Image (cartoon, rainbow, N blue to C red):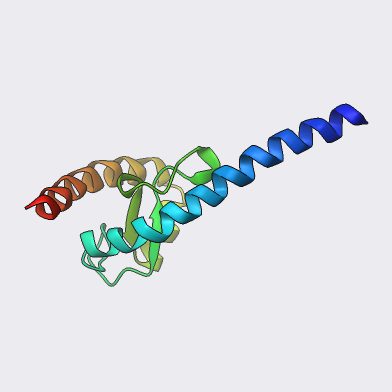
Length: 108
């Protein structure tokens, strides 16, 4: 019983701290993602309604700008569907280019 409580406490502490830190980061990078993507879906160009984590938080993805893509609801649903792997690959490439341009413009 003690081992279970101890293990739960250790794991819970690290997870909660990581989650809190990522939430702080997300509050900043979410706004940057909407600015970078002009409030439009990265896939189809319609008005974005979601800020999507390309590598899911549950898989260790963080709320870094290069891991966020603005998506409309339809594309967001597809990003979690049958073609998720293909969409993820496309998003990683597209967001990388957009973020490079965004950061270059921020430095100018």
